[in-house]
Image (cartoon, rainbow, N blue to C red; front, side, top):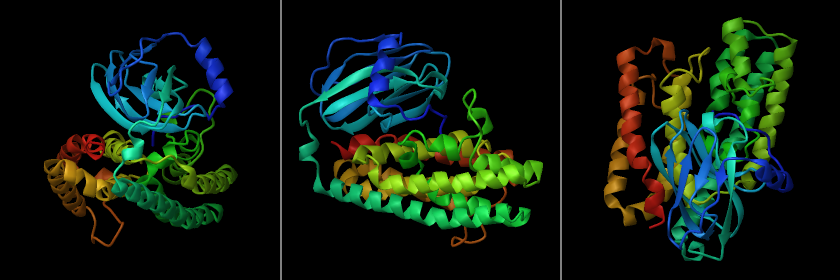
Length: 379
């Protein structure tokens, strides 16, 4: 679950908004191959270039604000090319993406809410994209198929969950809740790339924008576990969940997927684990966090495995470390389920402080080398 954003806007509306935004400083264009320096603060987003060649684009991000921020490269219609969430105050991050020629925006979103402060970015020419290793095209095609398979498999599981809600069967609905989320959690970066779907189906109460109606899985989770009741409102919200996820299923095939978005998405899935699952914040009512945790790790591992043939050629030491850390985390998660073939996990409220620390350490040990995967696949 990412921080909520405003709904998709048209290119014309975005251009108009840019003219009205304050705090965006345009500077001289970058030379070919140079990274764009992005300095984010509480009300500003300064970038060192407004034009770069197509191909590999690198953002060197520094958050000088007092709140965590999110930095994104966006299409004019608000679809996400690449992003990095939860960049803490005083921290830096390098984001690598593959970008085709066209018009884009770089957005800084202090507090990870709202439209953010934006800067125009023009990407010119053909760049390095035409030189891409054919194995990477194969990886992208395979991942696109995987994402669609996960979306297709999610809808039947969601309908089982929704039927139980509409039947007023509290226990059946509780049982069907976590399984209905697995495919979504495995491929969440793809869903998030559309911008407007995640806030409808996966936002938590503390992620709502002012005036936003709370819908989706977590609103129903609260009803099932905290309120312990299913009323007309919940039944209506269940129907809407099917509608919104059907929209997601139909749009998955249109997602912009590149080798670097796959690599960055894998890292984002680990960030999801670190900021939501390990803390117990994501499934605060049902305590089914370890189901989401496992699905996030599986999704990250799928991206890595598809990219590994190229990454291993470019950086064998990195892939050896990633193999080691994925194996260690998988083994640790197995402690909390009765069978490797089962998706039943220990309720997270039964996982003690020391065990949570062990899980957190394992996630961090994997996240550090995983952050280098994008650079390894475009060397």
